Structures are given as C-alpha cells and as structure tokens.
Length: 404
Image 1 (cartoon, rainbow, N blue to C red):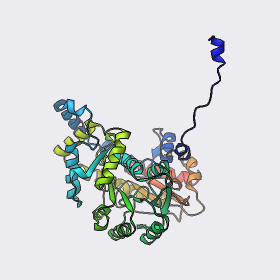
Image 2 (cartoon, one colour):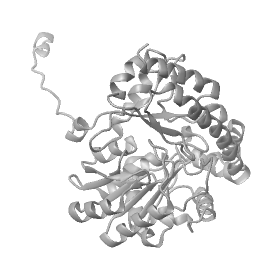
Image 3 (tube, rainbow, N blue to C red):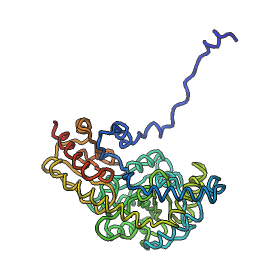
Image 4 (cartoon, rainbow, N blue to C red):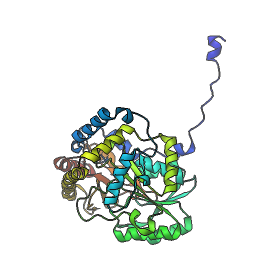
C-alpha cells in the first residue's frame, strides 16, 4: 500500500465514554484549587491539613526503619486485606475508643475515599437508591453518581438527618444505604448528638438499611466530649460500615484509610479492591504501623488540635466584619470546616469570581446538595492558614463580597 493510499484510509470515531463518566462531573473543589493555586491566594477552599504540622521526623524515621530492617517485605506485594501488624494496631485504637474491634474486622484502603468506592461497587447496582445527608460530602456524591445510583437527600436540621424523614424515605424508596459524616461533617462542621445517632440506628434496624459512617475528622476535637460512633450502637452493629483515615491526623500523602464492616460485606469489598489496586502500598502500611508502635500519635493529634483550635477561633472572630449583615454561621467543635449562610439574594457561586480577584477563595455551598441547592451558603476551611493569614483572608473576602 502506498503512503498516499494509507493516508486516505477512513478513520472511524472511537466508542464514546461510558454514560456514567459523561453524566458525573469533576469536583468543584478541585476545579477551584486549580484556579487558585497562585501562592498569593489565601485559600479557604481546600480541605488541606496544615503541612507545617506534619510530624516529618517521626514519619521519616518510620520509613527509614522499615526500608532498612525489612526492605524485602516493605517493597513487595502484600495481601489485599492489609498488613496484619497495621490492622492489629488499628483495631486496638478503635477498641480503646469504645468500639470492640479485631484485626480481621478491618480492610486497609488507599485512603478512606477508596473505601467509599469499594462499598459502591459491592453494594450499589445501577438504578439503586442511596440516601445522603443534606448538604453532603462532595466526593461521596461523585462516587454514588459514578455507580449509577439514584441519590436522594434526607431532610434534616442542625442535628443532622431527621429520623422520621429517613424512615419515610426508606419505606417509600427502599434504598440500599444511608451515607453520613456524623462528626465534624464536611461541609458543615456539625456533629450529630448521641440521641440522633441512636434514632438513625433504630430506623436502619427496623427497615433494613446499611449505614455508611465516614469518620475522617473525629479525632480533631477542640471542645466538648466525644460522641460514640453509630457503629457502636446495638441496633446498628450488624449494618454499619465505619470508614477511617490517617489523612487528617498523620499525613494525607500516605493515602492510608480503613474500612470496618460485617464479614460478608468486608469480603465483597476485598474482592472489589483486588480488581482496583490489588492492595494498598506495603511500604506505607508498614511505616504507619512502625509510627504507631514507637510514636505517640495521640499526643501529636493533641498538638495539631491545639493549633487548629486557635485558627478556628481566629476565623470566628473575623467573620462578623467579613460577611454581610444578616449572615449566620456555625461554631464547629472540631474538624476543619465552617459553614456560613449569607442573606438573600446573595449567590455564593456568582460571587466567587469577584472574591478570587481579591486573592482569596471559598467553596460555594450549592455543589454539596443532592437536592435543591442553597445558593447562599459557603464552606470555609480554617486549618491551613495561620491566624494572621486568616485575618487578612477575611478582610479580602469582605472586600470581594462587598464588590470592591
């Protein structure tokens, strides 16, 4: 065949993307971070732990140890379920915090975000109904959307999803699961009280419902007393999946999370993980286990929480001058986020470009809603910047909202 003939060969279009890939968009938070990556921008948009607070020496020492003492094991393939030594140490930490757990109850995941994806694969068929709180963690909406689920928001109040509304929706829609972040929720920072958790567990027991309890922030408490996990409630023990993570208390770059679930579902998630990545990186697992064995993670978390408390307080102190009169916001007892609502007719999505021109950023509240969005809301992350940077960022925010 001549070159000319080859060049004239008809070229057909490649097959289209899967419908789920076309239907589910990217993360608005990631999009905003890409736009605001300039160093002069004070970024309240990301959910980024403060990097200067990472225990760099302790983590580095843990990696050095496993690479020097057990290099063959650290650099080799591992079991899908996770390194036994890490699972045992995780089980001990969970048991001490009030949820009796054995190593075999746990599956190590590549961040708790992977745990969500594995659960969607193991539980959700295309067209199944999934219930979420309103507003909801953005990446959970992405996961369930990619699984082809029909995502419905449970009406609620300041204490979280309303149990009566949950019961009504469960009877009417026959959902597979309820997804919730009950402690220092992303995006609102709220915490479900013990009574509300018990009521949700009771609904799940009466009506046959899985509860997916995501807890990446629970150890970052600044005020008040810890509230028991939903997974510890007698009504929910056989139907609650608890997700955890080292991202907020050790380092997000390790990409280490875990999933605690009843045996049958945990095994199904392990099979899904085999298809996804075989196993979470061995060297990271062993380094985390070494860190837990020789370092005091609780003391490190306490130090981080002390700094974050000051930053939360700095943001709370500056909000009255930064936001328009009539705005309201919460006072989270921990976590990383604060939720604010501006008075009508403010639209925080429409306002964002003017605010970014002032070299500051937030996340509009609308994308966090599975139902009708509240366009007057916004999420602010208060942990990444110093109190001085927060004060300056809020001054810029005020100028941007005011149209300067």
